[in-house]
Amino acid sequence: MKNKFLKFIFRLDDIHPRMNHNNFDRMINLLSKYSIKGILGVIPDNKDQKLMIQNEDLNFWNQIMNLEAMGYWIAQHGYQHVYDSSDGGILNLNNKSEFSGHSYALQEEKMRIGKQILESNGLKPKLFMAPSHSYDLTTIKVVKQVGYAITDGFGLFPKRRDGVLFIPQLFASPKSIGFGLYTICLHTDQMKEKDFNQLESHLKEHESKYISPNQIEAYQIKKEQYLLNALNTFFGILLKLTSRIKRNIIK
Picture 1: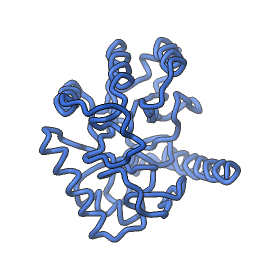
Picture 2: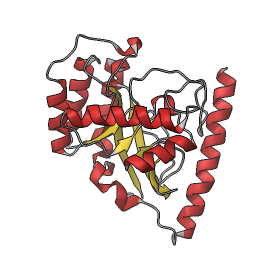
Picture 3: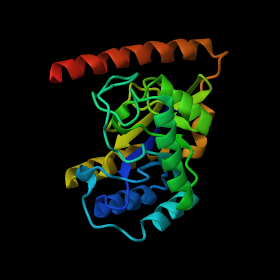
Picture 4: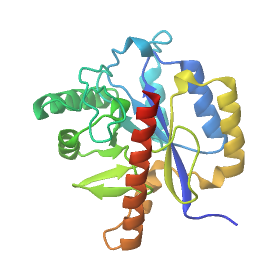
């Protein structure tokens, strides 16, 4: 029996002209095989040396523009992906950030310039994706002013808070508790042969459970859906506590 209450969507992080193009192209081909589109977290002006994997792809922006035309959504993944703050932000999953802990003026400048770069390369970004999941209340104010949604946070369904749509992101692999909309966060740079094989096995079995970005808002919780709101809040708090405990244990 099909579970209509369980859905998945992909987001691919750290997309930029000097990423691991071989892995990225392989991922796109795999998703195309199953007619799946997802969210692409594009770094507007990457300066993070750890992410400089291959030579610059001169066709990069055309490729991303074509994927957007096919139905992928573009998320602005920070600005330069350079960590200049130790503030973990609202989620407090990491002690590094490009945005959290900075003033409104600085965060607005980074987001505005990054958005201009994406748009100057023919893209129409719809979401904000904070590097290392680090954003704060000031970031949310800037996001609202820019007109983005946020792909991040704890919860089981998309929900609008403070005038901003949040699309929760919980796992880095296709996991679930049986219901909800799960954003699967993948960093293609680091993926190995076994990762692609495991992913394809999952897609073969669960292809029908994947949605396209333009379907996300259909799963948004409305204010009057009291039970779903209560479940979303409960599991959000539970997952947040679990993640923080896990982080402290790893430390």
